Length: 294
Ligand code: NAD
Image (tube, rainbow, N blue to C red):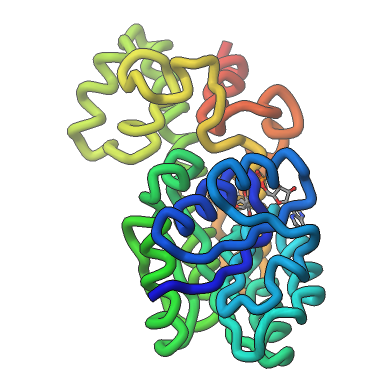
């Protein structure tokens, strides 16, 4: 079924996602505050509007892909031009609490709402191979699933409103902690005279196996496509990992969960992202762990 879609936020992720919706035959009108982002999307066949309100006018589906919860909440307050009953789909990574408030704002305005954050990064957005984690009731999930499938390979119904964001921050807490664990293991191995390749060859097929090791390996060599082989150009920026771990810590605090390693990882990534890690892939945190050991 062809949907009429208003798409707000055409950045690194939103731009290629909107382009994939056009490729799948949907009518997509997009808006971004940044003129270059609008121009890039226009070059991919996305019709562009002069404002967010114009982009969502008459849309039966409104997708947002914005940096933070504040941006999403501000946008939701302004997007009253969407048709009554329109389905609002927020794909940004934001706090579980903000996702629930955003959903309530949309519902009070006479719309429907789901949270559908993604995993898979810019490469996944470009290749339409993202994983969507969806918080929605059954009827809204059934309605949104075919549209999300045009931008991703897996669409998982995680539970009611907010459950998609909960899955996203829990997953990224695993990722942040495991990247630090893998990095510490390489630093320790090196200090014991073990080559990076030897440790990789063992751990990649043993109980130390994880995505941080086998797909995003923090040392150059064993995984040629990992950011370590291109001076740690992202990939997944350290600043985004710091943001996601901050959301996980806030959620842990709100629910009285200790999450000691999650809190430590959040601390390390916050200082790394503000310092030498600014602009680098999150795997570059190994360079600071190495320095500390030296
Ligand atoms: P980005 O900064 O490249 O894009 C965000 C876009 O939103 C920008 O182009 C900005 O101009 C636009 N924008 C901000 N406020 C706006 C407004 N009020 N109206 C219209 N446009 C507005 O960020 P991104 O990498 O595309 O990430 C978007 C979201 O996806 C974030 O929440 C991020 O955490 C999440 N995410 C990113 C990745 C990744 O690898 N980049 C992976 C998974 C999830």
